[in-house]
Amino acid sequence: MATYSYRAIDPSSNILVGKIVAQDESVLEKTLGMQGLTLIEAKKSLGISWSTLSTPRFRETDLLNLTYLMQQIVISGISLVTGLQDVVDGGSRKILAPVFLSLSSGVQSGMSLSEAMLERPDVFPSYYIQMIRAGEVSGTLEQSLDYLMQYLDWQIEFKKSIRSMLVYPTIVLSFMGFLIIILFVFVFPALIGVLTSLKADLPLPTRVVMAISNFARNYSLYIGTAAVAAVAAYRLLTKRPAIRRIVDNLQLKLPLAGELISKISLSRYFKTLATLQASGLDIQSTFSTAAGVVNNTELRARLEQVTESILSGGTVAGALIATGSIPQLVLSMVSLGEKTGNIEGALFRSSNIFDKEVRETVKRLFAAVEPLIVICLGAMMLVILLSIFLPLYGIIGSIKGH
Image (cartoon, rainbow, N blue to C red; front, side):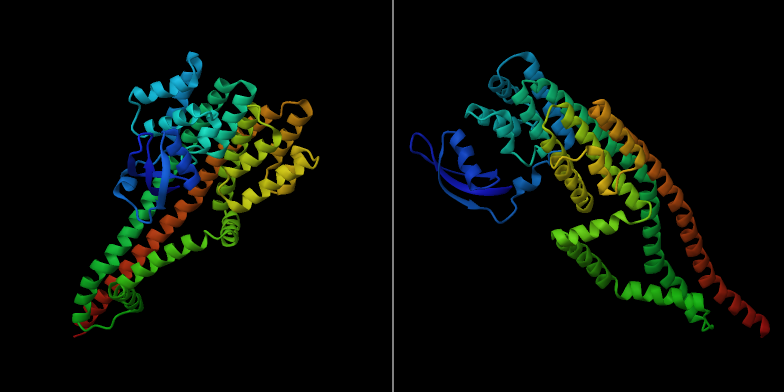
């Protein structure tokens, strides 16, 4: 999506100037055409305007609210155009109103609801549009919206549970980092300055702490710049597909953390599969769309091979075995679901298994990290005490010797 500055002419031959967000110029022209305007000139805005910065980001909770309102429109029995316009006129939330206005304009111009959603890729994910299209084709739009609400609700709660489990270690690690910075930048220089002024022989721990402290103080600007540059370089390099896949592959190989990443991704994959399958989507769209929700590119590539294998005549269970990423219990469940004709139920149960395993993996990860945190804190305190008290004992011993 980009911001375009445009000049257009209305039916009364008046020239209008403005700015609008669109995917490209063709979409911009179509959007203006829905408003009765003819595009004369369009320029992509290179800068970021204050209005763009101040526009709130469309979140999953907003999409859930939007889906609920659309479901109420369908249930009410009124026409889609009337219902969408009523939501706009009714003063819907600031972030929802422009989306409903866009959908209303698209439907009024003769588009289907799913086609109108294609004009807003910043709001509607691929799986969402696919399910709406399946509902339109099969005449079960209300049911598709209900499936989407259940899926979005699960996704929101799933993310909340993961975040809540990550709160404790994040706070502890942040506190450790903050404490280290305070000690080495402010506390140690003052204490070591006093010890140095006494002209005593400094033991090795004290000299090590002095070296680290001096380095942190003298090169803090360079350290900060290097850290920012490293983060920027990482983000820039990982935008390249080949490098991103190497990084994602390494992430999957990390002990416990890689297992957690894999299980979170597979939980989303199987939940999306089950939801799309329940909505009546064809098997190719179901498996290819579900693979698209996986963020890890290495795992996504493996799951994309599942679609190709199934289309070439293979079984779902056989295709999943070939990925080398699916646990045996889930494979057995999917295989049984294929044989009994209840693949949808097997996929839902598989997703529930991964949900539970994610929580168990997080607990095991914390169980492994907590002793490391204690050891690091203990080692840090030992170094601090040795660096301060060893010189003091030396000074006291020299005084007694005199």
